[in-house]
Image 1 (spheres, rainbow, N blue to C red):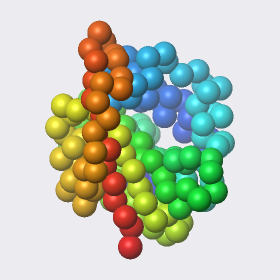
Image 2 (cartoon, helix red, strand yellow):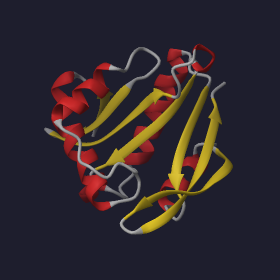
Image 3 (cartoon, one colour):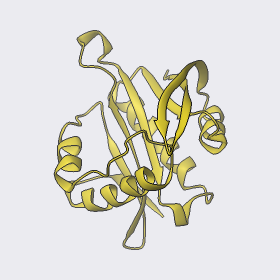
Image 4 (spheres, rainbow, N blue to C red):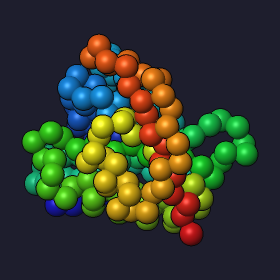
Length: 162
């Protein structure tokens, strides 16, 4: 498996993985699949402090991670929000762990100070992954999302990069 910085040629695979999560999970609260143009706009909104990486096996992109702008306000410029998705057929094989390790390293190199993550309550695998990398659960947003007919809580995790 290769982990590398994503490039514009990767956006259709990123779109495929993300849309799979939209359709089948509550890991994202998006409810409508993203078009290629929406993914391209998202991709182009990332800069040096907001890297996007992919995991590739042979010629197949099997996962991706990104550090996204947390807020447009200047005071938040060293704070990011993590996204990480692995294609369903490749989950529970250590790919998320490798992506997490690499995206945090890239964030540290880029001068990111704080990484935040929103994890839907009940997502034990994601909660465990975040905790294993030193993220601390700092709060719960109660009943903030609704997907697949269920009202959902979201836990906020934080990691201060040193």
